[in-house]
Image (cartoon, rainbow, N blue to C red):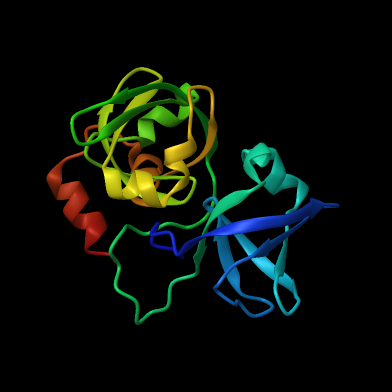
Length: 202
């Protein structure tokens, strides 16, 4: 599990034969889970200055592989003693989105991201979403797009500062939105009594 709060921007030093090698101030151990651009990966090798993670073909099929160069977002897996300041992020990418519009505001910047329509049902106004591993709040949801408002601090300290129209990004929708959708999608005439009955089982 992760929080969606980026620890640092790591530097990609090599990516070939399914192995991604990075350099960072943080020093993970072999076997550690670490999120790179929001994707949960396992550390399989270490040197004195770098660490390496392995990407399966399944993982590469579902993420924006073209962004695994130069700088990437990095977050180690959370510990039980950590404060949860973002939201619960699994590191399992649902789909790839595309930035289709960037609008500068007085003290923030709006990003409009297009996503496959099948995933819009999990994207809720004022709900949480992880974009390339960053925990963010959704402001508006449309038929195939949603709007995020990025404050200057986030813009300066993440790769959002470099994103342009056409940039592809990894999207992980909110875990609870997915669970609730699958829990209730085949049920009709849901009442609060039904919900209370289900919740009482947990």
